[in-house]
Amino acid sequence: MEAENQTEVSVFLLRGLSDDPELQPLLFGMFLSMYLVTVLGNLLIILAVSSDSHLHTPMYFFLSNLSFVDICFISTTVPKMLVNIQECSKGISYIECLIQVYFFMIFAGMDDFLLTVMAYDRFVAICHPLHYTVIMNPRLCVLLVLSCWLTLFWVSLIHILLMRRLTFCTGTEIPHFFCELAQILKAACSDTLINNICLYVATALLCVFPLTGILFSYSQIVSSLMRMSSSEGKYKAFSTCGSHLSVVCLFYGTSLGVYLTSAVTHSSQRSSIASVMYTVVTPMLNPFIYSLRNKEVKGALQRFLSRATSWA
Image (spheres, rainbow, N blue to C red):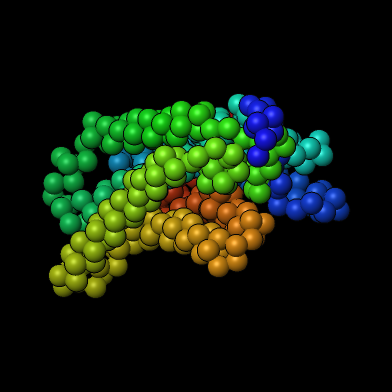
């Protein structure tokens, strides 16, 4: 590669999901609808939890944080995609791309960490019910969430600083609808060994360790439920985990699906389409899962909406 082609690039090109001009209005309408449903659904969960004193418990504190993170998560990628479709453009500036990578890593990691913390909360509630209020006190809940944020701020910042040292060829195209770190590293013209090592370490930190924590928590929960003599008690105890377990399966199932799709097909476009599942569909479905499967959330939403209607 000649030196003049390895200048400091100012704009990347996002390939998007399709190059077909006839599909662009359909994609715009579909993703705008999913974005609005996601924001509205998660916002309703936050408002319902904050307005109902019965839901001021650790489990719903973490749920409202998860809803906030999901709003931010989808807002990191979809609005820029909608703007590009509307303007018939594929460009994203270098700075915008760095910002998108930074916040995408933070919010994706927060989803992982919060699901792990929520699994720990259910573990304490079912396995140590008499000590639940002592262990899961407000101070610990806040510290757990803050420690997750601080960890991810620094991990993401390290990746951004390492990206700053890379050089890119003029007209670099990213085969995705947003700036994904792995795709950016593949497009770099300089050596990315250190970046890739840090990416693998971050993947272990943000995916493997949280998933291990979730599996350990649920193994202890199942073990505790097996020792219960009452079938009604088993059902009541496990019903509090149903919504969380559904969200965990959805998040990790779609993430695994993206990984397998990338490994089997080697098609960047198919991988991009598959990644829509965990970047867009999962945040959209989370409020429905919690509101439909959880009677307390459903009741709180009904009371909030009835109050909102009466005020109007």
